[in-house]
Length: 203
Image 1 (tube, one colour):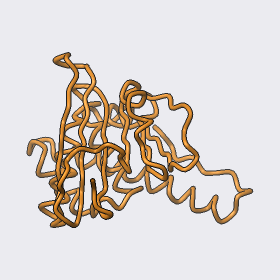
Image 2: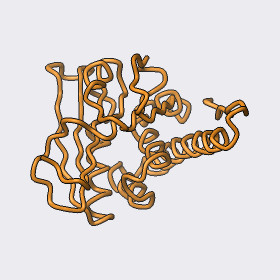
Image 3: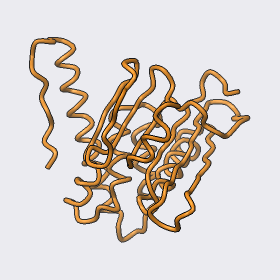
Image 4: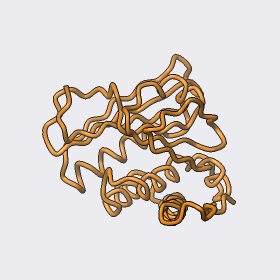
């Protein structure tokens, strides 16, 4: 049974997307930089590459007694299978994020806050679609206060090879910029519901 200040995150996708790296980076940001407690559980399908993959992360101000995320407050989906298998577990009022080009969501609970970003497309435009996970982390930093921005950025840069830090920093910034643009658009819409929402450019 989790405590009231625990926040559970479930990241889903397929092998080769760096799903587990997302979990590791979030845990590092929370523990090393934000000085919180964190756990991470990873799971793979039977396929060596390309099969189902997930990472469960819990972040808390207090000691974590049970490391499994049964009903996440945040669900990140980077594959259709990941969405289909896990969408029913998202807590009421939870935060749902998916990759625009890889997931077609259905039957969303109106209590959820839902966002999507073409993370893989952005990463491809930056020269390597394998950085979609870092784009997604940048996006998460803009729409959630799960960890502090500087903590997450430092954790990203310390978790990737030195020769790729510059390009990964650009990927992180691209995701964050997109998230900030969406947040600004939603804030304007809340202030004036009759104003058509501004859609940030995807390419």
